[in-house]
Image (cartoon, rainbow, N blue to C red; front, side, top):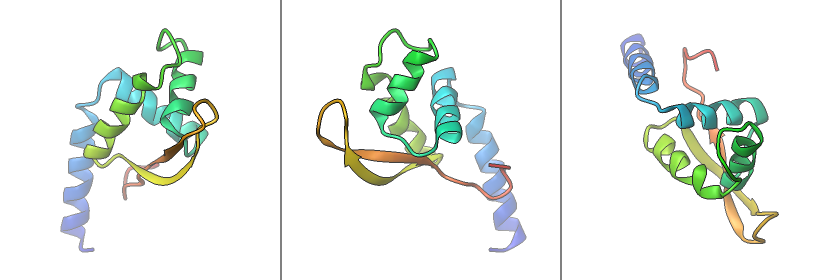
Length: 101
């Protein structure tokens, strides 16, 4: 990739970061610190940190979809959810060049 493309992508990445809500930032931080997780696992961490009133997965799942639309996270696999017994997506932070992540 040439330098102009890298520079443009880096600028776009930092512009997107300025549009994130506190919940988006919390979800990203949890994924960065804990590694790949499901929406339910992230919701449990949000609750443990006092960010949400319960560990309901819907506190995390919509934020993951929004972060995926912004190309900041992606589904990287599937596993069985320990709470529901259903197959669910596992999410990971997308590494962006020049973002120090």
